[in-house]
Length: 269
Ligand code: AMP
Image (tube, rainbow, N blue to C red; front, side, top):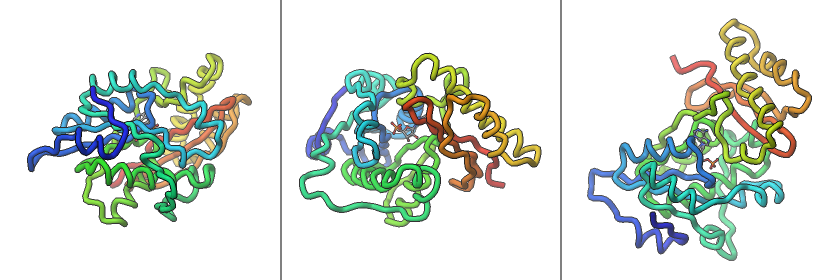
């Protein structure tokens, strides 16, 4: 598996396919798990060339401490990505993405507000900016993102439409551990005891779905489940609409680790 770390190296390494075939891009922050790999597999099933990017984007992190402890394992990621069908890893340096004097930002104003946008000021500005740069450098036909980060996908979708980007967005379902916890690179930061606690998050969201189906308030039901463990600090439990789906979204802190997840309450009619 070839790993390239700059835009010129990417341009040289990426074979532009013949017309009629596609380049797929799966943007990630690395420390790959089955959720990421499911997106790479989706891409490999329909694209002749699949690029997986691995970049821990400093501009989407608020707390310096958070980015410092974000897991990094590029060689392992490259092996896993190759097995799932990626052809190339684009792991740019911070200088490549943010050269000296960088001062241009993409802000998706409304979709980027509320939930994660409020909890992590500046987060979606960093996400949208880095994604636009990745899209420009790789020039993919199709980009792949996970439902797990539903508000993020809504922000990217809005940016694609607003800025007339000639690419298609595909969404992959959330891949979960056997106890329901959504796979996340951050799960490795949980202690054994915290990891046990974390399974309450998907259980709370499932309770929310049941309440919604019964005509009750899904947020209240989820909050009631989360309240049974005082080791879980709730950031928010809120409904949102993304890609015409009604979702119940939650963010919690367990110790120093912040986890987010969501479930579908209602699909489009
Ligand atoms: P990240 O490396 O966490 O920035 O995630 C990179 C991409 O993988 C994003 O589009 C995420 O939504 C997606 N992703 C993360 N976790 C999962 C999961 N458990 N299932 C499916 N996709 C995921």
